[in-house]
Image 1 (cartoon, one colour):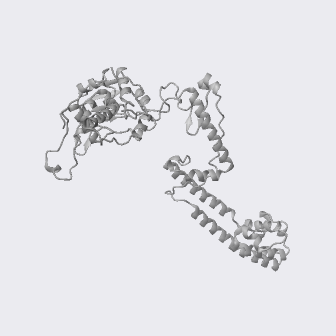
Image 2 (cartoon, helix red, strand yellow):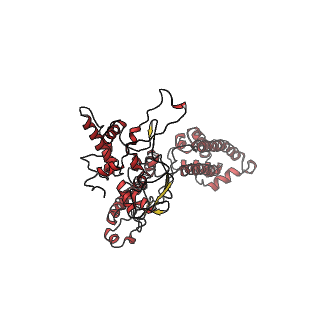
Image 3 (cartoon, helix red, strand yellow):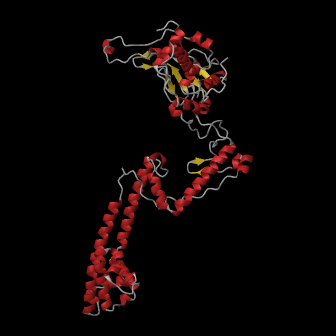
Amino acid sequence: MPRKTPNINSLARGRVRASMNKFNLFNLYKKPSIKLQNSTLYQQKFRSKQETRAYHGEHLTERRWKQIFNPNLESVAQLDASLKGSFVEETPLVLQTYASLEKRLEFAVFRSMFASSIRQARQFILNGHVKVNDVVIKHPAYPLKAGDLFSVNPEKVLIAMGRTKPSLEQAVKVDNKQIGAYNRYVKKSKEAPREVWEFEQSKPASLNTIDEHADTRIKGIKDFNESLEKNMLQEQRNTTREAVLSKILTTASSEESVTAQVFENLYGKRNAERCFLIYDKLKKADHKLIKEHSIEDAKTFITTKSNEFASEAQAKLASGVKKPLQEIVSHQLEYLRVSAQSGQLPESSKELPFDPEFNKDLDFHPKLDKDAVLEDESSAVVDLPWQKGLFGREDPAKPYFSPWTPRPFIGAFAILPSHIEINFPTCHAVYLRDPVARPGHSEVISPFHTEIHKRAYMFYVRKGL
């Protein structure tokens, strides 16, 4: 029987365990270096044994561990002369003190990251969820041999290595918070789209909800460049002599006093004088276009040939108007082309161009009725951009968080063992050999350094090193 677990992850005691529990990670984070100064040799050995045993096989009684302990530590070294010299690292042989535990099935399951702790691995084995060489083994202490293939029920691995499935009440509470934040985002996107767009672009790539993938970013840039070119061609087609003349006269008709400055916002300062010249000539001639200046009227005036006018004065007036008109059109066409080219973005650009329609599909999401959802879970409708279904309960039939998400802080414990070959998609692993020590490296994973293991080994071997 394993030892009982009264407050195994106590923050006050601060022991480091073979577990992926978040409190255990905090104990590891705040763990001070073990000071052995001003202690007798026995005190040093006992303290070292106490700390290392809390991690290596804490569920085993001391009597049981002493039966397993093997004082003969295994290491390997090359037989040729390549390791000779002063630059060869020392072999951490004392880290092999607890190597005899690593061949136990429960330890192999934990090291393969199929369980979140040694004790959970024991439960999987005792409940018949672990197979060795395609045979169900219900003995956590089963000793693995080189070449043994073991596997764990994938559903149990998903439970062990994933987030905890929330209760229905917790899921509704989280979703209502998310919906509230999303509705505030939608409201701001409608009121100040450019501000929201620029804020999203200023975020780190991992938090930018607009640019989620490189393909999306490149496609957005291509669409933006194509849109610029399309708009440029459309504006160039609309920039004709009759259209320019009609705009000049329309602008002048709304002003009491017409000067060159009136036309600066129309086609720029460079063409303002030309626009004023055209208007001034027509005004002095008291031409009918001053009163009736539609595009059709302007087109009739522009397309009339010199020999078709009633008098030579009208022909001369038309000639004096057409020349500056053509200069304005030519300049405007070039301006549109250059503006479109300078506005285009390279595919390597890290920022997406502003899309005024990015908020077109954003709609407010109704809040969930807690009582109705608690009575009938299927009545909950959650359709957020990042989540479909209740938080953590997209598939209520699954016993784990769905869609599956790794447990928090898993990265701190994700250490691949050298003596086990793991296949995560199938939840299978091969026990290659017993862990050994090499120059500068030991295959026994431990959070403690060699000096601590050295004294722990001395405590158990009783004969020193």
